[in-house]
Each structure stands twice: as C-alpha cells, then as structure tokens.
Amino acid sequence: MERTKQIETLEALLKQRKIDRDMETIDAIKEIPVSKYYDDDIFKKEMETAFSDYPLVAGVSQKVQEPGSYILSEWKDFPYVIVRGKDGVLRGFLNICRHRGTPLVDGSQECLGMMTCPYHGWTYELTGKLRGITKPYTFPDIDRDKYNLAELPVKEHNGLVWIHPKQDAEIDLPGFLGEELDEDLQHFNFGELVRHDEKIKTLNANWKLLLKTYLDRYHVPVLHKNSIAPYFQQGVIAHQLHPPHIRIAAGLTDLPKAEEEPSDNWHILKYAAVLYTIFPNTYLINHTDLVSINRFYPLAPDKTIWCHGMYHLKGRYQDEEGQQMLTQRFANIDAVFGHEDFGVAEKCQTTLRYGPSNHTIGLEEGLLAVFQQSVDEVTQ
Ligand code: FES
Ligand SMILES: [Fe+2]
Image (cartoon, rainbow, N blue to C red; front, side, top):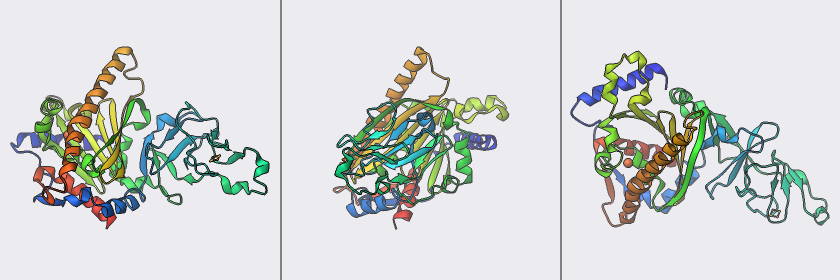
C-alpha cells in the first residue's frame, strides 16, 4: 500500500478508535436470502460466471521460478497444471491427457522434465506439445498437432500467479483489480514470498458462507474471545470498496502507539492487519513479514475446498527458532479459521433449510451484503 494511503488509513483507524461505537459498513440493515447458500441453480450460475469469467489466484511466483517447477490445481472441477518451461516461459494447461483424459501430472514429482501420462505413457513437453506416443504404429496417420495439451491463459502479476478458466480469455489484471488495488498489492512484495506451509481441507459449507466469515468484525469479540480477539482493537476497521474486490484494515491492539511517533514513520502493518477479498474466491491477509492466502473452491452448494497457505518474506524466519515460530503461528491461524470461523459456518449450513429464509445483516456486518451484491451482479 502506498505511503499516503497507509497514513490516511491509520488516521481513519485512530479516529474510529476514539468513537465509542464500532465501525458501520452499511447504513441500513439488509437481508440475504439463505437460498443463496444451498440452491442448486444459484450454485450452477455461480460456477458459470464468477468461477468462469475471472482470473483466479493460483499461487505465488516464488514457487515457479525454476524450469520444471509447477503448480497443480487443488480443484477437481478445474484441473490445471502451471509449469515453467525450459525456455523460462510460464504456461498453464488443462491437466488432462489428450489420449483418453487421464490426469497427467499427479504432484508426486518435485520438478517436471516432461509430462508423462501414467495410463499408456504418452509424453508431453513442458510447452504442452505432444512428444511421444507409446507404440506409435498403433495410431497410423494421427495428426499429432491436434493432440497438444489444451493451453490456458496464465499471468504473473504482483508476485502472484493467475490463471483463467477460459482458454480464449485475456488476463488483464490492472483492469480487473483497478488501478488503486493493483498499486496496493504491488507494495506488499508478494514476489518476495516464500512458502512456509499449505493445508487443504474440504469443508461442509457453501463457499460464500466461508468467505464471508472474514468480512465482518461483529463476531470477533464473541467467537474469537479466547483466540485472536485480544490482538485487535474491537470494531476498529477501515474498509475500501474496489468492486468487486474489498480492502479492510483492522486495527491491532498496538494501534494507539502510532500516535507516539510521527506519521511519516508509520508502517501500516505495525498497527493494522490489511485484508483483501479478491473476487471471487481469494482472501489475502497481510501481517508484518507474513501473508496468509486463503482460496475457496466450490465442489457443491454445501461443500468447498479451502486452501490455506502461509508465506513469509524471503530471508526472514530462516533459522530454527524462526521456523518453529512460524509453525506455531500457522497452527494457531489454521485453528482459528478452521475450527472457530468455519466450524460455525458448517453448523449454519445445516440449519439453512429450517431457519429463517433470510439472514439479517447488521450495520457492522455490511461487507457481507456488499460481497453478496458483487456475486449477485455477475450471476444475474
Ligand atoms: S490416457 Fe494418457 S496415454 Fe492414454
Ligand atoms: Fe472470524
């Protein structure tokens, strides 16, 4: 985040802190129909629009620096492999053999020299080109050029790797993120991020119900009273809408200390966590030197894959003590999201058909309605 924006945001948080009332993000209560979380037709429409028409975050650039390094999709409904070619070019492909559709790369290799199908042994170069057919005489006159892997648009931008689900799409990230958000992300050095740990879990809740748990601070002092609540200033947030994306700065307990130093010295992550919802399914959490990247992949209206990765700046936390600290921190964060937030979301999922037909959204929970509005706009 650019310096003047950091100062503006911290000033807004300090001002908010002095008002004895939590930050309101909408000016009137709203209703969200609960069918949004279980209806098959709505789910189908979301898959055809929100999850088909926009680039998705696939991972961090650091993971695919070397030739043959790759990222494999965690989502069976969009099986891709992104691999750095020997020519240095990063390419994305559907991870599906062109012979009879077997998933090609299974993730067991550290690095790819070429891609070999486990079924009948067809091989592909890292450019996606079909290289070898086992017993080629059994495929007389085959036009090999028609059997290259299906290529998908891939881009590296702001240290993140993005992939588009549509083969003929153009990825325009400055256009998709908008100038301001794009600039924000540039300042967070995602290009310097190194993976500490990643966890993948299937949860029994709608993807929006899970993602929305990050968007309100109303629940923090109650649900998280014994975990993360003490680290935050209660109800002190500053948000900015970059439709369909959202930025939130949440004041940390240390926020009042900002007033003890000149604003020219302020660094936002010292006093606030900065969180982004990148439409449709990614949630980034920036702390000093650390980033959590959370992605949600819907499997069914009530089933979602949650990928949680924790990354740190290159050169930090390298020694044993640093690594142990990260391991503990990752376990803590994972437990807060996995058990507290998503535990409640999974329970709410079970009552959807029997409880009220709408969820009532209070003023402090307004970003839930804002996010829902973005989804509604693209699915309409
Ligand atoms: S399905 Fe891949 S070689 Fe046959
Ligand atoms: Fe939470």
